[in-house]
Image (cartoon, rainbow, N blue to C red):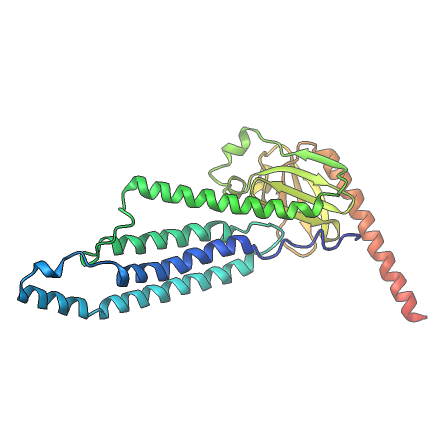
Amino acid sequence: MKNDAQWKLPGWPWELELLAVIFVITAIAVPVYIYYTADPAIDASELSLVQRAALERQQGIDTWHDQQGFIFGIIIVGIYLAHLAIAGMNIDYNSTSFTHLFSPLVFSLITYYRLLTISRDKTVSASIVSGSPQEIAVWILGVVLITALVARVRMARHMLNFKNTKWDIITPTLIDKSYFAAAVLQFRPLLYPPRTFRLSDEGILLEGWLYVMPIPFTHVHSVDAVQNPSFMSSGLSLATSSHSLVRVTLTDSPTPIIISPTDRDEFVRYCRSRSRTSAASTGTSGQTRGGTAQQ
């Protein structure tokens, strides 16, 4: 292949990872900082000597708050390590992995809960969040939009690798009512709706709204048109219609990718011709290397 770097796997989504790390650090450090730096909710100068002594004893014993902060820190770090482990198993052709798409929201909700516990502490006057349903909804919506924006930036950065690529076929995904009828059973196409499929002499590029999937023909085992809608649930479904299904089988994965290009016949015909060309080229180069070694 002429451009190996262009068609390599997208790799670790560092942009989304940074967003998750920001919320992890915020969830651990900010509540502790607020608790120990905020002004007390009660003015000790207005209390009697007995009440003031009781308040000083209460404020002097911070063991429970220290333990609580430590326990929360351990739990949050544990969740983050689990996130890293799961994400490491799911890094593939998709530039925006499922784990990184939802981790920022999970850690942001943990951050919100920690801030809410501080706001409801009667010994601290700080009040950052109120816990109202409207505020929670705005918080979730804001994090989702920020995550989508970061994923979009990552996608655009990866698309720069293909700015000089000559595309032989560009076909949009076919969308019809079968896409929404399968919504109950098919979660991934709703989460990762494709937009356009691009074909060049080197590979297939699946372009979504928040992700790209570059698949070089050297990694493609077969491309077949299928008629049975049950195939939508038998692989990695990125199809938006059950009437134009194409199954892309990879050489390094047992799970096929199911898509639904509008120009299905032309798409399959082109992929088969390029796959045969790639296989023949690989075989020829292998024989050449073998012949050279024998000499």
